[in-house]
Length: 286
Image (cartoon, rainbow, N blue to C red; front, side, top):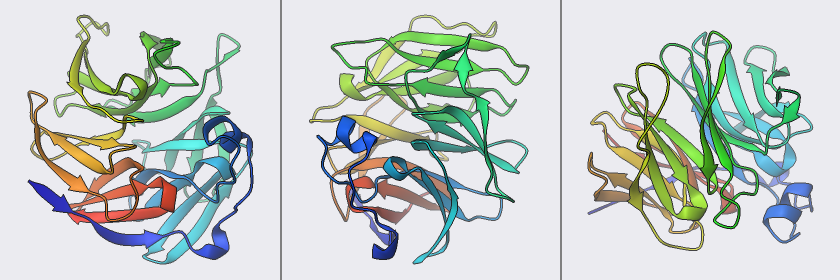
């Protein structure tokens, strides 16, 4: 079974920057990249925000075709997550760590730039628990050749726990509805790991929940109203929808390119970024 997507909006030509950046040198063999969208996240008013990684920009989509630059700074913003206070979005920034975006002013400030005075490898994505704890991935350039990617929990009380230290490219995150399991996309392992969260804050018996194929791997994820895991795949051009046992029950197919990177759910719809074309796609989803 397959659900088609349609184009919701695409970055206007006037906002594109076809230049070489540090990010494109590291990730696209030095080719000019005019944009690379990620991090779809809704504010309390229902407006969608996206990041443009190589150019350090965050945009608000006031309506299809109406793109507003909210922030531009010296960074590489990837994942966005709305803080429980509803006034800020936290940013997983590959270059600068965990940052906070003030939705009213557009100011970007450090939230957790370093751990024990040491920089992170390169944060990728993040998700808040209901109690305010923040889970985030520290991906860097890790992979099967260097499985040292990390997954952290930054407690609302201030403590920082390393839950995973051997991840081959930890990327997207999703919490189960009961928040007893953290799912982690391990892009270069082409899999999703299942991380049990124990009452004392520790984890054990981490396992591989689902496996895929392709030149890239799983990226952003979300949990739908039925508790199914929705997994964006960054080279297969779709969002896989998995049952509670990790079986593929259906998929959302890209109407643009194959680089399907992230997803946000709202109002019975799924909004999906296709990064290679700078597009946001949409599909009805309940």
